[in-house]
Image: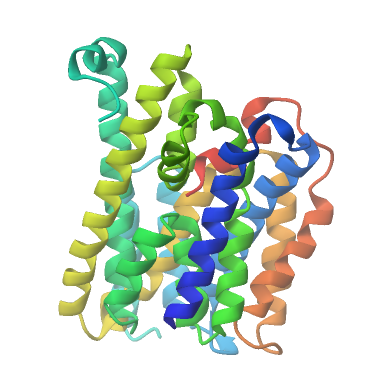
Length: 102
Length: 239
């Protein structure tokens, strides 16, 4: 990832953060936009989860990885501690690969 | 510090301090994961470290790094990160009065605006308590996050052959754990599911990074605005 890309992401992010403290009472963010932004966050993150779990390049990633993510997701839903969730997901995937499932 | 220590301890009760410490610990674990996963995935060590100091937004950092690691263009990575961080815009207005009126507190405070610091700040009543909470939480998170990323980078540099450790499953799992709390609202859940289907279906045909952006098409299923504050701010729990 080139430095220019990091700088662009950092600058844009800082602009989003600074707008409020600088413009404070002169501008108001409409509720609809607030709602849209927070839903867009959830949509993008979920899409990243799905593509990162299921695909590798332009094809299927194999069964081991999505199985591990599924185990982690179930544990997260059951409010397991964060480190447990991550280690269980990685261990499931590693175990399946050890058993010969790609 | 912006306040002297005596009024600091009077203003911020022990329960709030403990909560802030717990959030710092949780974020440190996410930060260490970010450092380890990105470096073991093939990024140079300075990339996650620089990103963490300058961008300081976990979700966007994971998203941008994920797009690049999947072979996507830097432009797609930046765009995905910026769309995620657009939610910081309303946060800035929420804490504008808390950050202070002097130009340097605005410049410094702006960088400390995160889901967590805003959520903690708005739980407090009164401008004094809010100010102390914002700066304490923001500075503590900034410190913990960046130290943890460096430690994660050091750990990740030791790990090679990440496939046999199942580390490629860790990245989507981190994101899943972060996004799950915001999916309790039905409209959000439908939009997210539709977006995920669009992104996966488009992956065989489009350059890496683009399918994730196409997922925003799922927003048409988001439905009518929710009534409660918790529903209108699901991103408070996403970072």
